[in-house]
Image (tube, rainbow, N blue to C red; front, side, top):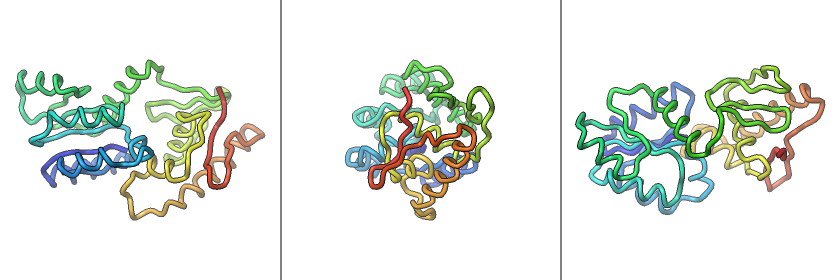
Length: 223
């Protein structure tokens, strides 16, 4: 999920709509509301954030520090001022990248993915047994063959593999795939997506790689 922080409602709504068209859940915060939320949000909610996008706010240069206290997700600033001093001030505040308007949401997503790769010193793919998932939106591979999946199932598989060896709850998966504040979708939809994903993996692998325990959640336990 992408979190957009800007004091202008039109900007927040615009970016969340654009990310929505790309199939990426997002939510917008007023800077004052965000400061309170980021300090009190549950760890599972913070862990669902893929990147923070910071726009116009009086507290712009204070926000990266508040974010870093809770999360290592990429922090990208959108600059309205095309000046070297403004850009350097943003970097000095602790942001990971600065983009200038207008900017396409796909560019923001690509920059965030690049930052995550550098931070984690990972390649563009992650392996879990015979399954390989990619960080650039491609379909996964199973035993070296492309394994096409609908977007939601693909993102669930990516999330499970990113957390391989650790059990994640239905709520955590929902937050990562649909966004923390999506009230139009029921959390139980995750069970339907996982059921379909497990059926496809079982058919491909001849066994079910996803372990589930009631009340505890799901995991893929491969080194």
